[in-house]
Length: 169
Ligand SMILES: [Zn+2]
Ligand SMILES: [Zn+2]
Image (cartoon, rainbow, N blue to C red; front, side, top):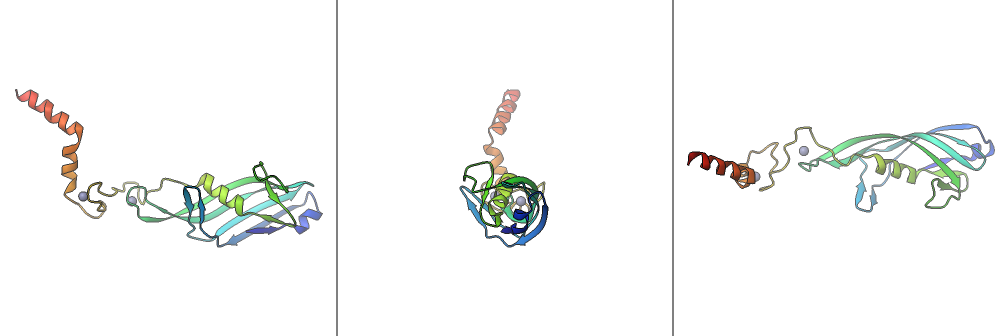
């Protein structure tokens, strides 16, 4: 996703505004995936101060996720604001994003804004009952017979049974 800033480079102090909308390929980041369910819309204000660009705006899209309990596929809306600086030929690990020529490449900014703010724990519904830990069936739609056995294995249930035995003696 690239923003042309040729005009603003010649006119420091002049504020630019743009809305970009693009389809972005899914991104794999060490241990994590960003999967897009919709185009990415970036709204950006930017101003050149002679050495770099001060930018602010928002990133909006929809991400594919899955319910943390039942693994059902979900579409999760994403919207977050950013405030970042672009510096000509900035070092890779610096505070500012680098740019060269007459374009700001917003790809890293979009990726970082999503990675830092996306929800990692989503549910299909607040009271999702999840999958049965024994047989794997979806407890939202099926009532299996495993639940009772699982309860019998519960250490607290055993303890309770012990107490009850004591009482009887
Ligand atoms: Zn669920
Ligand atoms: Zn089961």
